[in-house]
Structures are given as C-alpha cells and as structure tokens.
Image (cartoon, rainbow over the protein chains, first blue to last red):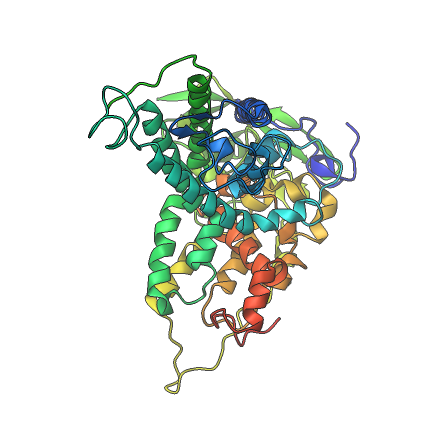
Length: 273
Length: 258
C-alpha cells in the first residue's frame, strides 16, 4: 500500500496495511448506538409533528410539556402564550431538551463515534481526510452546553410538576375521598412519569456542566466547603452520566408512547387507587 | 502448563516492514512482554523492544496488541484463548525506529511548550501551604506514567498527521488541567489550552480514558473540566458580565497569561 501524508499510513510510521488490527467486535457498540438513536429520532420526530394524542387526563406527554401552543383542554398548565403557533406545540419546547442532549458530553462521544465515525472505535482509523474537531463553527457551538443545561433544569421542574398533577384526583370507583373531585389517584401512567422524572433528574444533575458550575470551576475547594460537597455529589452521579442518558432517553419514549396509547383509546390506564 | 503461542510481531523500520510469525512456548501467568523476550532470546536476537520495569510503572513497553494500545507488561496471555493468534505492532501514531520501538519525541516537544508551574510568593515563614483537599484533587493526574498510549490512540493525531503541530494531546491536557486547578499556580492557562494546545480539537470520544493503564479518567476529570474552564474564559457572556460587575468569586484573580 502506498504511504499517504496522513493517518496511520503517514510516512515514517510502521507500514501496516490494515486500518485496524482489532479482532474484537469493535463495530457492535457504534452500530447499536446508531440503530437505537436513529429509532428514537424517528419516533420522536413523528410524535413531535403529530400534534395530537399527547394528553390523557391527568397525564401529559413529556414531549409536549409545558404545552404552550394551541393545546387540548387541560394540557396547558402554564397558559398558551404561543396559541397562535400553527404547528405542533412540541416543536416549541423540544428544542431545549434536544439541544441539551445534542451538546451533552456523553452524547457527543456516542454520536461522533456512531454517526460520524470520528473515530468509529478506539484505534480504528476514521475515514475522513481532514479534521478540526470542535474548534470551528458549527461544532464550536457545543460550548453552549451549559445554557442548555440551565434550560434543562427548568424543563425538569416542569416535568416534576407534571408528575404531581398525575397524582391528582380522578373520577372513578377507586377514587379516594368524596369520589369525583378530591383525594389522590395513582395509575401506571403516574408511576411511569415518576420513574421518568427521576431518571431525567439523574441525567440532568450528573451533567458535566453542572459539575463545573456547582464547584468544578473553583481552584480552592478548601475555601468553599459547601460547593465542594455539592461537587463531590455531582461527581458521584457523573460517573454514570452515560447510563442516565440512555435510561432517560428510553423512559421519555416509554411515557410518551403509553400516553399515546391512552389518548387514542387503545388501552385503559391501570389504576391502583 | 505451557503451550505454543501463535505470536506475530511487526519487524521493520521507517523504510518498510511486515508482520512475521514467531510461534513461542509460553507458560501460565505470563504476559505479552515475557513472550516477546523469549522470542528475542531464542529466535530473533535483533528484535528491538523498549522495556524497563515489567510492572506497569515505567511506561516504556507501550505497543499495540491485536490492534489495541497496551502496555505489553500488563497484557496477560490468560486474557486470550490458547489457540488465538496475538499480533504485536509498534504504536502506529509515532514514527517507527525499528521493530517495536517508536520515536515518541513528539510528546517531549509538546511538554516543552507547556509552561511549568509558576508559584506565588511564600508565606511569611518561608513555606507554601495547600489544604489537603486541594492537594488530593491533583493526585489522580500525577499517576500518569507517560506511556503515551493516550497520545497513540487519540484519533486527532493518529488519523491526521497534519494535526500534530497544533494539538498537544490528552496527556498534556491532563497537565493543563492539573495546573489550572492548582491553587498556588499563578498562570491562567485557559487561552493557551484552547489556542496553542488545541483543546478545541478534542471531540471527547474517550479513547484516551479507555486505554490508560493507570485508570486515570482523563476525559471526565481533565479534558471536560478544562473545556468548561475555557468556556468560562472565552465563550460565556454571562461569566464575562459577572466578572465585569464583580458578581463572580475571585478565584482566578491575580493570575496572568503565561
């Protein structure tokens, strides 16, 4: 093989023809990431553009929360300031969690490997002729991650409020209190939303930007004991950031799909009380 | 229990070379470097290999075993099936000198470009003091044995020779982070890390962390925190505003660009 002026075949380096000598299944992880992420993107895009079947009282899909557009009755707990918006209300809000995940340090690793093959796996030569990383536009914008984190905290608060609402009284023979209007309710949807919001918070609070903001940016931990303590907590969560990224991605999709099935009347909510 | 290992070794120099077969008898509990030494002692006396401590602490015997950057002395043969062929090549990011020995001077050039610690004045009693919690923060980074496997696996230079001039690599981002977190250092290295060292070229695909024989979390604990520090300095308008109106803490006050 002729030597080139770049990569593992550059002049002076050990002349080896194979782009990698790895014999393990290094392609499995990027392939799995590609398939699962692509599946999620297709699912989320369809659901976001549908503009319907996102609310089954008292459950609101996380894709549509807060519902600020021209939403169905009962879905807009924060008003409808964008009632004039002609498209799906999800498009108004999804840009924030989407931006948070797109600029996330874990997801960057995952999609640079799986979608851009840069590199496809460690010590496997990438197919690109040149590389400038995140030093130029548009990838320079990855540095805005912390701003998406600020937004993600707000979204997390809204989703937490949604979970509280998912406990609200519902009419029916299992209702506690005086039947129709008071007491609390819990169904499978409530549990799914609760699990989802826990995973969303684990993902949001384990973020590398969060770790930096709460204390990582300091040079003197000793002078800031409270922030140091916060930093140690976030650091502990941060070691599993990738896991929370995956779990919360699945949980959002599961909750949305469950509410879709309820809203379309395909299934009935499993009521515990 | 011994068996004949199907060992293949790259032999050659900068003008060319090839992978050659060296079936060699090995015993239970041995590592790849043991097999290489046996080949050197019994079959190929002129085989060039760099090694020293045989304990994973000197960082000399870096190579690629079945395509993965490893320390040969820490690569157990028991991790492979007895009938599996093991191929050992030199690190593919650096110029080869001969056989398994590469010229890693790229790393020493990058080390020279990194300003060393510049400490402030001593306390009145002539001592310098750091709280234990601040000392501990940098200990992880000091575990680095400079085996340069992280530099070898980093695709920024491995796959793009032209980036070597503008990119220092993970080993040195580790050093940048350690010094930038150092409470007694008076240099502000954030501009330098982004500019001269090319921190922005890293796309955090974490291969450096995967290959580190010391288990240093290079990406999570050094590169990403350093990237966030660069954002503070260069890209975040709120931080800039906070500094201007005095709302930020004075953690970086008094530090100067090296």
